[in-house]
Structure formats: structure tokens, C-alpha cells
Length: 123
Image 1: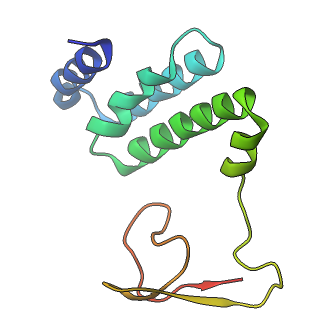
Image 2: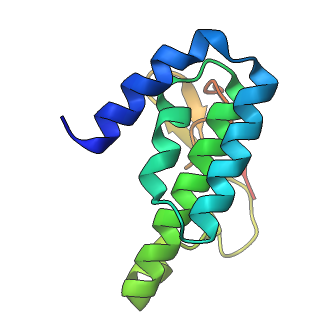
Image 3: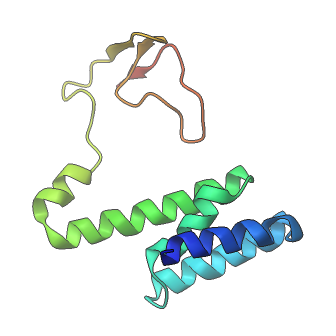
């Protein structure tokens, strides 16, 4: 078993015994350890993959994506450009997009924490 699998199983075993507040605190400690280079980014994955509190999942996922994005940017200017946020329309004119299963949509089909919307206007 690899270390991520082991950490994930361990997290799942401890999950029922820890309150949401305790898990959030543990996540903050883990994020700090990652930021300081004391822990690897993979230590954020159990929070993102196993927790049922959407705030914990969102914070862990955001932190993990940020670490990976920064690592890619350090490796290559092209990767940094590809990961940068881009505007949907250079002219500033709203663009209407469509998605077959949900109707009209934008380049980003879902909100930060959830469900797709049938219509998005990109400015």
C-alpha cells in the first residue's frame, strides 16, 4: 500500500471520533506544515477525499490545487501561463455558452462548491 492509501484509511478510521471543529483545526495544521515544507501536498488528500464537511473538503482541495499549480509554475513558464486565469471574452462582451445536458452554460460549468447551472453569462 502506498502512503496516500495508508493516510486515507487512517483518516477514515478517525473521522467518526473527531468533531468538525477538530478536523478543521487539524487541516489548518496540515496546511501550515505543507506551506512550510514540513509535509508533502499529498497529506491534504485525505481531507479532500474522505471528509463529509464541505468546508473541510473545499479548503483542502483549494490548498492542494494551489500547491500543485505553484509547483507547475516553478517548472515551466508555459505551465504557469496555462494555469493562469483567463478572461472568457477579450472584448468584454458577454458570451453565451451551451452544454447539451444542462442547456446554456459558460466555460466554467459549476460553482465553486456545487451544482451546474443551466445558464451562465461570462463577461
